[in-house]
Length: 370
Image (cartoon, helix red, strand yellow):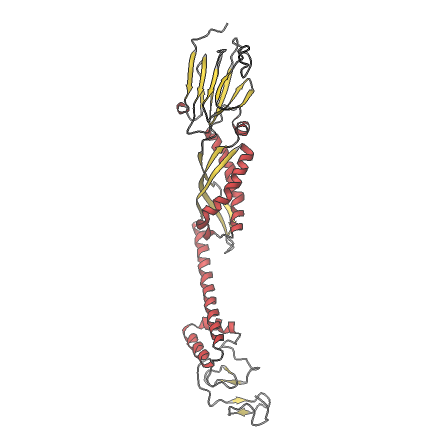
């Protein structure tokens, strides 16, 4: 016959007295087990040899609990008082009659569905990404935090905690972190493409990126483990310093070139507006050529003119400036390249080939229109 020790009337389970293992052994011959709230963990576990026939479990709200005996689960219990063993006609109890001649080990897992627990994530391996603006391949790393809460106690118990007495908060966070990182790697690049973001833009859109990733993480964790993620935050994304400099230099060079072309387009547009003021156009181009020859060539290219260093426009005119050799249009008073006055213009007739020293519209030798 089992020798009974003096019963412990009420044992208050204080989660603060537990270590990192989140497990506490009950004293022998306890009659009432009172389960208090835990304000720093999503779950904790107590177990012991409960032999008192009138033993009770008292669950304080908003806790929920699952009691396991001989592999049989009580199911999820809400706040209240429960008899562990049958008391004749008074109470059926959770597990029938007590068998006092053998060890009766009972596990009690307590869950706090009202608690939000903060976890931290960080990429151990980089996320491969090709910057859309520069097409430079980069490896991106990041870190941040998230909150988790129990959304479905039954699923959380079944999929994670269960009857594994060694399962702790540390193991839970390890499992959740691995899951969160996998979702981040899958969703991060997808969100960047949806938002059309390059690496340089990421720091300005971290909140928007996080808000787009959070629902996916929460939905998948809920489906897998019965957990809800009310908050997902990105604290920093970063890449290799050399890659960052390469991207920034590329963008700087490219933007300088774009600005150069934009300036040239604006100049060409203004010159087209001055089409009826030929002298103003010519004067501006002469000044531009002296100050910025590259931009001058770009403007000439946009306008569809021949570059000044090309002397092959024989279809428009067979005349050339006697000072710089640039092609001369019929009726010009000044050279559009060097500004020389063309009063004594000497040219050849494109029809008969004879030299013409007048500025008329017809050749004095063959009479054909010039």
